[in-house]
Image 1 (cartoon, rainbow, N blue to C red):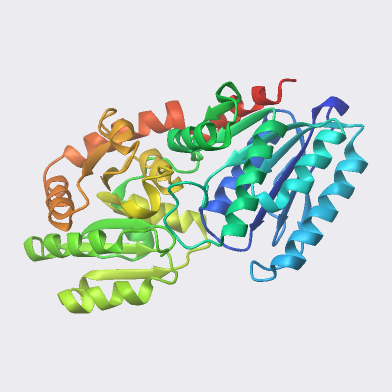
Image 2 (tube, rainbow, N blue to C red):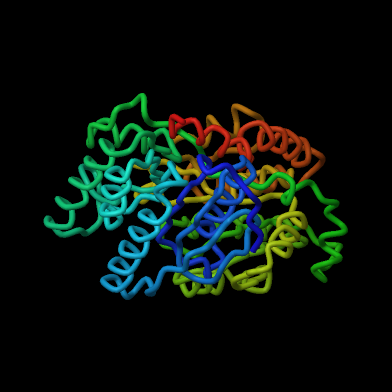
Length: 389
């Protein structure tokens, strides 16, 4: 790990209760924000769990405890960060926290020690309108914590407009302190690549056309629309194949649907892919890239998937299901097609893009949008002023 010399006023402590051993969007977000804070000239101390990401200009402090070891994880992480805040108080004035209510001791300690605090909010799984099971006590504690967070933080990064609305309406956060900044992409790493070359590197059949989904096989992903939508494609296009890049608890459900539709042989599972260059190749090999989330999980908080930005940066046309913000992002900028949450609608949209050059035209517009609005570089540049230094 290389740490270049900085002015003492340029220190930043970044705290994220995430496991960097898991090759998911959360890891990507954490590493890229830390990398770009360092690129802005800040001397970054990153606290997370899992292996050192070995980012130039970033010192790493490893927290302890797995996701299942809640008490151990929370206690050791808070204690370790508070020691770090104390030791760095003379040379660091900024504290950036990926917000969880369990990190409230860190926020309070940071404010007492004179740090300018900025928090990042990705989800609010509690409060009015939350549809899933949560105990009244947990709901009350998390509501109170989020209200206090809004008062302690000098700035808040909300990754969707819907999250900003919730913070203002339910938790009385000052709207002027909240910046809506989406999840982003490294536009130098994810870039337009010749489709045929990516297909060759992956050892795929060059005579086929590929549709890709990248991401965790999580409950909030609408695999019903994805798989049944591809079933529509498979019936019309014998040369179409679906690349499923990722893994997770919903895989069994996906496999049952494939067997029900008799299209298992038309789908390629990659499992978890930790090699980011290989993920990039799977996206580059595709003609169409998919994003679909369950409305009941995501409508309240909106969506800002890392994969969406990566698809755009790779200049691949996107078909996404309707959720708050997506139509404004994709169709308004000509970067993709937004359809109703309906397999037939998704299938027909994919089929229309597998014909002719329209997919590449949408992809080129998506690339321009990624460069203008979704690069991690531009997102972090817009984050730094929130500290007010």
